[in-house]
Image (cartoon, rainbow, N blue to C red; front, side, top):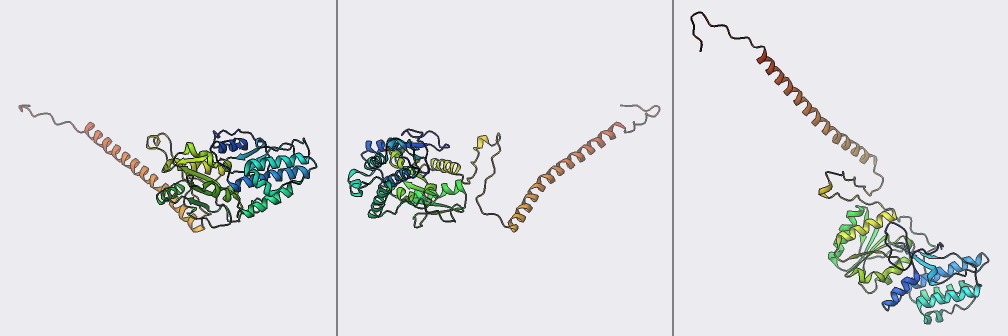
Length: 355
């Protein structure tokens, strides 16, 4: 577990380029205002993260002394859970009581009572929480399992939206932003978390589905775009999972913008934006960055030949224009010289009248 002091309140972040965090107490208040609880898998994962932070402090021979909802934060886009560094106050029993208080806030007092985290060491409480994972049919967090080695070579995208028209729009948007090296599916049956999920946020189980994907190996690399009928009223529903890329249904350009922001912040290769017609004369569009594997020697030779031919054509055009200009100049000079040095007509004979 990476420790870091929460730096941002529960207000929505203003920048998509910075790795901002949201404090958990603000997220919990948002859910309470809508009479909603955090997704079970997410709440239990946060409790486990807090328990691990306490265990690490105890392993160093000191109590943590700083566990509370205000000391826990969720990182935007990645959904990573951060716990403030140990303060060293109190004792181990106080840490245990703080863990119980956080668990009661997130998963409910009845669930915590069944888990019975009553001993001084947090690890026993974590074992009880893990049993709750299994009882709810949810695998435990896969923080210690590395993702498969194929991850990152092809961008795996899962569309969790039953509407076929929106699926088609999403596929076009993904291809326009990330190129052809993507694999888009409408179901997810792999053990590792995909790199990107585009989810219909209005579906009733959206938060639970994303929370369970976060538990898979590589879940912290998962990026999520949520589409709603009314984004401003619904964006709170996935806040505990670090989801900040919210768009309106059928807003394809908004989806492309969200995908581009995710790609830039995550270090993915994205295609360059197209330049509007009004700007093409003032700015040269950037070349597209292709998303592909290392080209073969045959492809490199073919590309080199294409570049040579492409460079030869402008040179031939310039040569032809210059040659025509020189020939025209020579013709004009020849005509002018002929007029200037033409012999004068002979004088009229004696007695011959001139006109």
